[in-house]
Length: 203
Image (cartoon, helix red, strand yellow):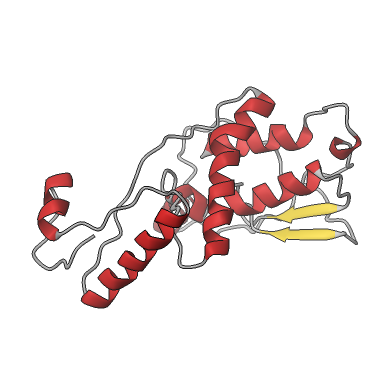
């Protein structure tokens, strides 16, 4: 997802001849530099603890503004997308706060798993919009590939109640044109031979 954070930064700062892009936003973190270490927060923490190094807290690279019109908490895919849309709308004085690097949290460890099905129709529409921005819109606007790879995933039902929930999700998915199937344990094994399906009700 490093590609995604780079594309989002370019999209939010690239001048397009419109007032919406001239917001005077101040970056709160230094530009990511190439490193030989993986940018994985928990690995870095475990390594520091193992070596007995004291972790020195680091603040923002520039002073935070004393006021802001909008504060976005979290620099994951949704936080970055929120700031991106605010910039396109011409909203000034917007600040994004992230405790680590952009997209280093949940967005990083779920890269490639942008689930389209959620119990709420609002969440389904939000995820569909996110998918469109990341898979198509950003690349068209910036000319940079976001690293998007289309794949699928399995929701695993280890009890009947969860399987019933997935059947409801599949019905919702059909209404939104999202490909989804409820599979028996045998069908799941055929799709993913490495999975032990002895205790599954379905997927």
